[in-house]
Every structure is written in C-alpha cells, then in structure tokens.
Image (tube, rainbow, N blue to C red; front, side, top):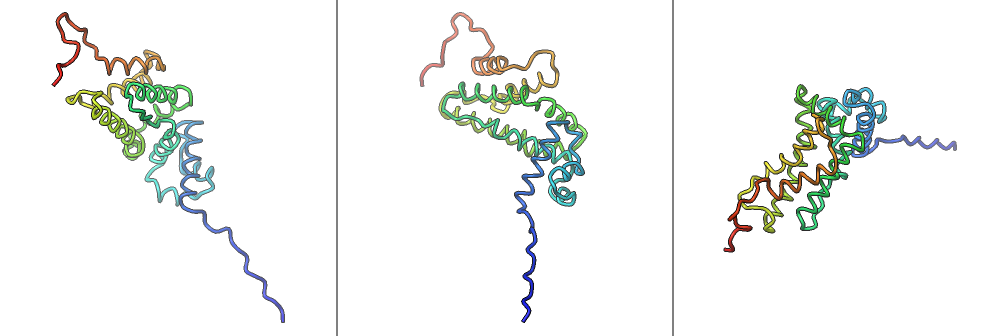
Length: 210
C-alpha cells in the first residue's frame, strides 16, 4: 500500500496586530528618514511586506497613516511622570518634549505633519485622534491631580495652561526666531507656575487661610 504524501503546511497569515505593528514601524522609518511626503501606501506596503489593500482597510489616507506612525514612535518618549510634585514632573516632561523635537529628527517631521494637516482633513483628524488629543488629555489629567493636591488654583483654566506651555514650543518649532532649548522649557514652566505680574507693596504673599 502506497502511503500518501502529507499535505504541505503553508506559512499562514500573520496576526493582524503583528501586521499593523510592522506597517506602523515601516511608515515611521520613512517618515523620519524622508518626511511626510515619503509616506505613500506603495512605499509603506513594500517596506512592511504587506499589501496596499490591507493599508486601505485600516487607514483612509497615507497622511492618516503617517500621523499614527508618528504617535507610535513618540508615545513612550513623552510619558508624563507622576511623582506628586507638579513642577518637577512638568519640567521633566517639557524637557523630554523639547529633546524629542530637537534631537531625534522629529522636529521637521512634526512641522511637516502640521503643515500638511492644514489641507488634508484625514491627516488632521488622525493627528488629533492619535497624537495631539491624547497628549492634551494626559496633560489635563496631570493638572487635575495637581489641583486636587492644592498645587494649582481652583479657578485656573487648565486648557489654557496646556496651550501656554506646549503651544510655545510649537511656536518656536514653526517660527524659529528664537531657539527651542531645554532651558526654554524650564523657563516656560517657571513662568507658568510662578506668574508674570510683579508684586506690589502691600500685596499679600499668599491667600489668607480659610
């Protein structure tokens, strides 16, 4: 009796999470090396060993893919420390943010993403959903905790505080009249937390105790 050959086992499909991770990694590599215009579905699919059909299924445009790839690349670098000391935690986070923009080739990348987002609604939505929105939410949560500890005034507009700090860094990135440095980041924190008004004679040093 002749034995039948056993069927050959195929490679099988890679798990979707693994494929997605590979696509984002490939997109981030192109983004950092050549800028946002280099992130096309053709080039990313080739670099990731995936198909364009898969990319179109997960992202509405190459710009949306580029925005998510940037977030994936920067997420761990921008974690917010939580030691219970707002000034120390905020200073550490702001310095890490400036280092990311100035030392890791990401400054031109994020400037490019912001520029393209002005005319690409899908990139703009992805940038907000995957990057700027989560970053803002994380900062607001940190400020809420600090306010609960008594480190910030109850009447302080926390959203404006976010704009004052990170918005100033984006301003120096996009309009480089002044340098974007870690010293600048530290000064931003000090100005925001200490205030800008000079004390006048007779002003109380602190609010009276309740």
